Length: 267
Image 1: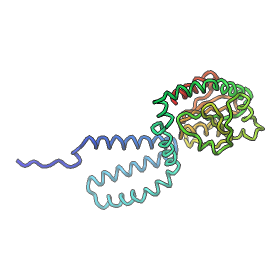
Image 2: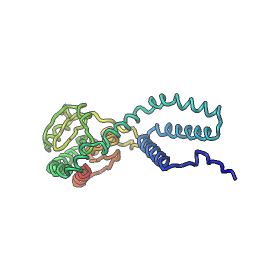
Image 3: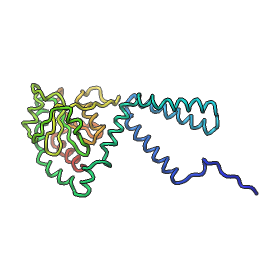
């Protein structure tokens, strides 16, 4: 009796399972980046073409397989052009992830996160009081608090301050006639690092149309970095917070303190 060998397709190894899992994880992360943007349709179309090419190759359809292979080979350059914003976000996500964060590494060894929270706890009331005051006067503001990510790149787009956090300073920065009010302030540790900073805006097509550019910038910075953004609406005086690209509206000053404490606990 002659035994025929099984096709290579059925010779599965545990490394093949790991390979499939890693590819699926990578595709999921890419989908999360493009979800809600116009690029998601292009992404789905590319996946469909690649899956069709894979089936054609498995069926040994030489002519069609060659044509699709040439299209996919040339398409890599086109993908870099089409997805340049998404590729930038992806690289920022890798560079600012907790895996490579020195702060996260040191906190796990030296309990740095607890010490940082204790040092920052005294400034929470100042931030909450300033936000309450600006909310009552309908003064527009956007405050970004650094957690795991290094925000020095965005701080350099504004004016460096390196000042201690206080209610009066926060209110004076965002006073409508102040030269520093147009933009965001970035807080790192217990200091205001910079003011008038430029932030990336969210490109999510499902973003609520009734919210302005401050809210979109708050969502944008928390999409590409691990940070917490606070927004005070100039139109309604409502306080909002953003984390991981998600906005929470109508936040009370008491809840604002709780959200900042929660973010610092994960620091």
